[in-house]
Image (cartoon, rainbow, N blue to C red; front, side, top):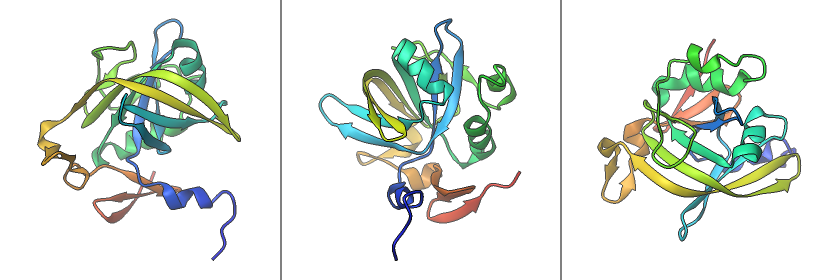
Length: 182
């Protein structure tokens, strides 16, 4: 079956949906949901996120060059949807309305989300235009995982019940389809 250009990217979306925190030039924290992300290097450790230049996150990344990739679980699906659709430009208080707790990061200015199960603190290594989005490569300068979900040298996504976006309001959680409902 042949797919159109909008649907074809859904074939490779298997990474955990995450909340990326950034700060603006005034140091105010923002958060947005991302499902387009990927590891890109072992040495040094690097990860990429894909961001539209229309998003406030893009402005923050250009201005300050830092972000935290926070991997959250199915218990924060409402917040993932809210943070992914509500813009800081329209509502600078959106983090106050989300049910997340911010904590200081170890190496970067953007805060970490306490309820996350993985935290990757990153410094932007490059931003590369790719069609209507930018590939933002970040060098991981600090990383932490909830020890409950690290066994035998791997992250136990199935036990953590992380979200894996498959399109629209649908996510895979531990192999089961979950649909977000307002």
